[in-house]
Length: 168
Image 1 (spheres, rainbow, N blue to C red):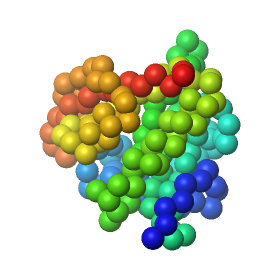
Image 2: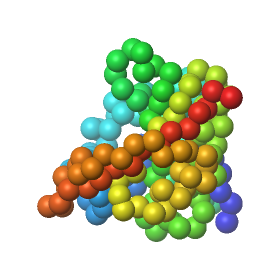
Image 3: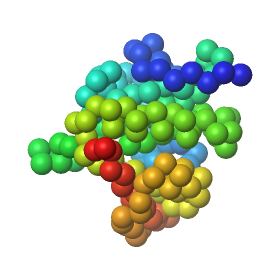
């Protein structure tokens, strides 16, 4: 089995929505609460480019899309323009097999190479030891904890925030 990493393409959108909707419906790791129709995620998809700070990388395993990593606007105010929020989602049937690390690492390296981003931030809804370990492995530092910031599935969830300098 060969893992290939490439920029996301419009034809990937349906599969990316399918991967993400599992996490929306079945887990607390995203605070979206209703699954998305593909059309509702079109605007999300159009923010990405092959250059610049907003990227979408797709992981394929033997030709099948199994995950993605992205960098998006951190906050809407202009002074945040050199910071991005990063995320990675792997199809639930493929988690824990080491596919997330190279995908996320490639996204971060592209941000370093781009030289237009200063900091990358990743939020992790807790508990999520695999995601915490992944962020630490890739050089993120814990910078904040938001307690009971999200409410989903009838309970409150904490979020830890991680930061990585991608300016070098």
